[in-house]
Length: 256
Ligand SMILES: NC(=O)c1ccc[n+]([C@@H]2O[C@H](COP(=O)([O-])OP(=O)(O)OC[C@H]3O[C@@H](n4cnc5c(N)ncnc54)[C@H](O)[C@@H]3O)[C@@H](O)[C@H]2O)c1
Image 1 (tube, rainbow, N blue to C red):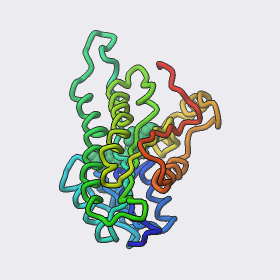
Image 2: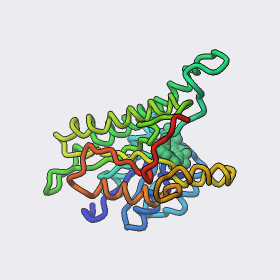
Image 3: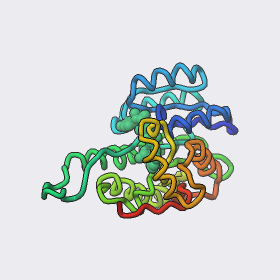
Image 4: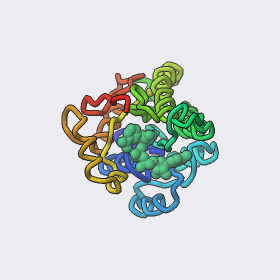
């Protein structure tokens, strides 16, 4: 494996922040492995990547799929870095709706499962594989970036499932960093505010403008490339460990 260009696994790398992270690391010459459950976006990404990487179609919740991604990284030189972007939310509503209906329990559990269990599954299997690698001069065997959200700090009304899941990832970061210190794997996280991913192209322009106006500075949504550059920093700066970095232009979400 080239020490200059460690292999990067990006979960959820076929879309949005993950896709921007893939492009960033490919542009820096890193071999990239993507684990994503979207077969269509995954196929076009695989074509774009060619021999610069590999795409595994599967889920972070499936141990065999995660192991396939680790195996693909092994074939490219050995897994060293992970950016765990697979995640997201679905409309869930309030804990108790205006008509007295309690929040859907399955939506809550599904959201926790994807974001929390999915990220944990990625960390535990990847770090276990990294443990077998030769350490570098610092004793480091790998580094992981988890993806939380500003909603993990100040989740809004209607975000109980997503906000709880992203808060769990904030808590997971330091514990995982401590747990994995014995094998030389660092764990940090990014908590983005509102990022300008392709999903915004379908939203009414007024909605986007209103949201931009709430960001203190710069008065715009975050660029996916800015996320990718922060992920790179957290992976390369050897003294960053157990840290959750907000990336939000000083935005703090209001209750609604
Ligand atoms: N976009 C934002 O403004 C924003 C803000 C805060 C946090 N985040 C977080 O950043 C991460 C990426 O967000 P995004 O906006 O790029 O989302 P996105 O929906 O564009 O991309 C998510 C990708 O993850 C994949 N995925 C979903 N479930 C998966 C699974 N079980 N296994 C493997 N892949 C799976 C999807 O197929 C998709 O390609 C998420 O964790 C999200 O919660 C995003």
